[in-house]
Image: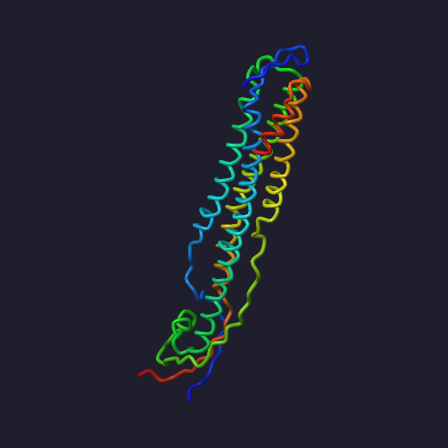
Length: 152
Length: 112
């Protein structure tokens, strides 16, 4: 469905079917984008944050294993002490564990900007609709077509 | 009983691991967002049929579309850079955590 208008003294042909599709399908795509951003946010949490916490748990477990059976970790001592004619027996290992939180590894800024871009998308669609309507006379009922398409 | 000694050392207690696949997982979402953006802007194309006969209003609409598309593209480029960066920093920070300071107390014992 193509409408012709002579807005501004120049003939412009507008594909109204494409405009209505942009108005309805565009909104659906923005909703999908919103969902995808939510999934990205969740994926960051599981893939990055949870991964860091899981690895931290493994380190804590290993520390407790080392401190619980220091005799099994004589190889650690061998790296630093020369075993001459006297053998060495490890009597204890105390790990001075230091854990820093995961820093500077979030996507907060990007996720906020992406969410804003979705809102901007909805505004863009409404503005595009208004711009198309403005190309035609009220008698062409373009606004009515958009309203009907929006309800489908 | 032999003589007891103590030594303070820094030691890696767990092997290094590769977490680069985390980047690939997050990139899937970035790629999906890119596809959705492309689909969105494909919808806009084809609305104005005779581009060579642009009016003022049409030009303004197309300029706004270009600005919006560029902005979205920049956002996804920024997202890609950040995904790469956080995937690398995750790798580094986990690796750092696997090296810990410790005091080993040992005793000299006669060799067998």
